[in-house]
Image (cartoon, rainbow, N blue to C red; front, side, top):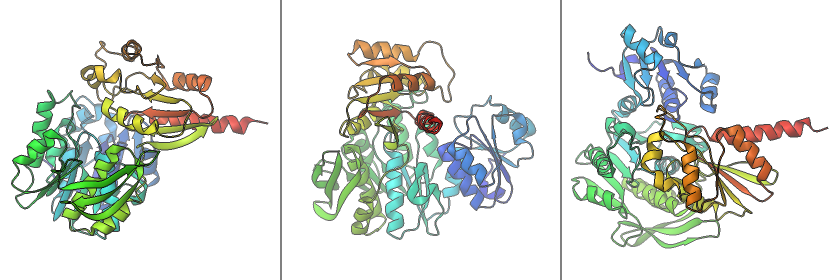
Length: 469
């Protein structure tokens, strides 16, 4: 049986398992634009599921066999395992089914320019930056981001032009379903080690992605990353590198940071300044993301002066060092960072913000990631004064029984990191409220549902204030 193609299901009913995911919810809106009748299901009620329901999409919380009945096509994410009750029922009924990444690749087909932004870190921020600058530059792209950007009104944008911009995730090799004509590689590091054997296996996958580029395509990559540089040496298409090294095509001349970590620089191509960038998002990593954006936009013939001006107005995507509220004089932030490098990077930014004590609230993500990167987890929150560790978010995995959050806390304490195990969100909120002080800063970290802790604390505070006489 031939694999289904989404173009054959425009105007028909499509059921999406895991519709509340950042990518799936965006794809749902794209399918709506193509006239598909949608239904969906997810394990959790989130802003995404509520927003889809408000748009008229019937969304069921909880997976049940009957959810797929009467569907013409079923779409599922890589996190939805084959034994999921809806996938099992779809197979029993002989319903055509397609994985999320394959659907995204099919939606990109036919676009003159298809931009895929990949890398271990910075994909969402760089894709978001590119979305904003390309719109401002008049390119009118179609956009798919694995996050939410207020500038485009969510995670997707339907454009009238010939450019399709998407985040290209390496998990499960999903980016190999895409057909990019332009690729941006932010960096290559260890992650998703439940799927990849090791860092060399990860690098090979990125090499496969780059080899998807046509001869007249273009690759933009971090020239300071040795693994990216190695992959670029063998490419036949045009290449542009960015970074601090003098050998990079794009560099940030006169780079400075203010007291809160906001970078300013002249974006220079082969030593020639083409525009000034004054970032409103903090951290050295955002300088790299901004350089990647300028380099890619330039390769697409966008005006570099317009691009740099638009970059200077970028204020970030949601769940990226996002301020979520203030309680008892304590500022609450959230960041999607879910592996040790990302947590360490965002804490370096949080440390620069005015604060009394800095609290890191870590929700470790997946048992396999914690096991493979265990040693790095023990010191990645060293910039925080106090670290609270919740139970591990299993996500797509089942508990193997040989790793738990208490072991992380024990290891942190042995390394001199002040840490406390607060298993649940209720435990964490109680501990914070009992110990925080005015002027403190709390940063929750993780790509699971840890952002809901921020929402929970703000909701409880609103309720508490309302009950006062």
